[in-house]
Length: 160
Ligand SMILES: [Zn+2]
Image 1 (cartoon, helix red, strand yellow):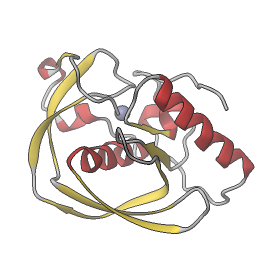
Image 2: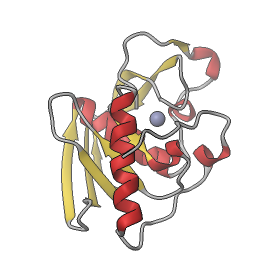
Image 3: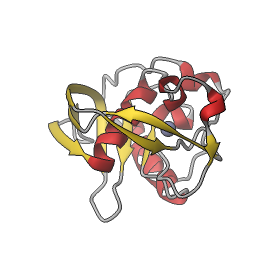
């Protein structure tokens, strides 16, 4: 287990489309363990593999007080509703912005054992699912904002 370095803009790995995981082998298991350690070390709520420099479709989410969710090759199957909320990203330290996100998000993925899972999220989990799956496609929350001038200094926003 190890805490990995979090990549920040303008690191190009953050803008690449991550590749599907084909084999959930020992190296993938180790990466997932390290990602969980890293997320906890920085008090993050979610972390995607590109944020630690690995262009693979893997993300971890830990809503405070709930179990860690590991997502391999996740896909959004349904989004419902729209809301405006504050968002911050570990790869853009010190900033936050207001963006539109879905109210409810359904996702299918594999877990760390290769089993198919389906998750329905609302509130912070819905936001984290959309944010982390965006990372796997090289998308950052600023892409959902008209201009970077709209960003403000980070306060107590959960970081994703
Ligand atoms: Zn992020």
